[in-house]
Length: 473
Image 1 (spheres, rainbow, N blue to C red):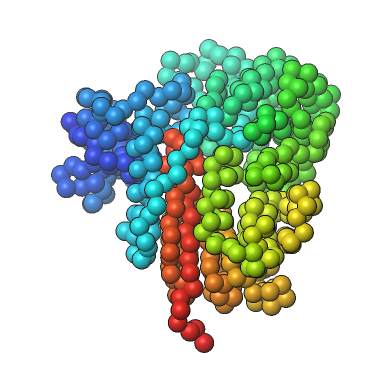
Image 2 (tube, rainbow, N blue to C red; image 1 turned 60 degrees about the horizontal axis):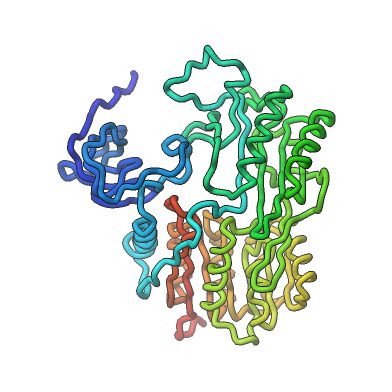
């Protein structure tokens, strides 16, 4: 039996506040209503898409009176592209919402006992702040309402850009993106024009056919560029023709890689990156340290805010120069090396072997001799035997993926009993869950949110923990 489609419109509703996941919030007849693309103070009509006993979800079908706070989106792709959903929201209101999000996850939902949250550290750059973007080639781009696909040529049906939210097979063709500074837009537009003119088949993710499938652009604060282009299969003549044209047009490209990826997904973490021309890496500077960034390296995508984030982590670690520090999920060793000057020894652990290779190379290039790095799954590497062999940590700094830490990792941390823990997280929800586990032996002493991603709902959060005084024998 087919499910009956909702036909419910809520009229003349005033948006009250910002909610989680980039949505806004209001109430109607005692029920909470979550609304897409609305700003507090907007008076709107809402079409309901989901109705539950105690809440509803919907989107604005008519703007009756825009909020006095509402800003005009600066990007022509707003509303279709899945990113930068908070463009209509003033940046100060974005920061307030992110600060509230941290409190909600840690206190209201996580029921944690925390000190007052420090004011969030906003980003100096709210546009062109990213140093890495991925773009997808698709033979099935997203069409606007005024477009009729049947009247378009195959080339006009292709797109190079970002996936449209909730549609894994649809890509929005991006003319100008405000996330990464030039020459990012120029490189992407040049490649689109060249590939379509020369008959490159864009990838069809449903049929798993085509030639060119996705590309990455990485940049540094100094203006160097790394380009990584991924193909479904190899065609040396066409590939080299594209690369030579791109390199001639953009001398800023210091490193050009390609990947032949015949898998069913676009991830390159398990693929070989082949250097076509140029240097094998680009480099970022931070407080006199030089960090090598390869095609698979993890490096915080907002470089200036990364410096502030790492400075917060180092300050909260309260290092005196005598401590053994474990840097868990170390990536290319940025935090490990950033704190090494104030520690006796630093142990870095990371899942990606290529990242650890970069970490070792970075430490050597920076003249750092008190860092050791290990590659492997955290729950397999960080064991009681590993701690016994390499020394009990006085301080643990961890910056895990969004999913947080494995329960086995939490137990090893609790067993090692470091005096202090600094937990850096890109997901306050999983952070709150992990902090509840660590709370068996630790007290939260500081909470510092940092905004790494303006115009999005995402927030980075740093918590400092101190071992409780009581004995755990």
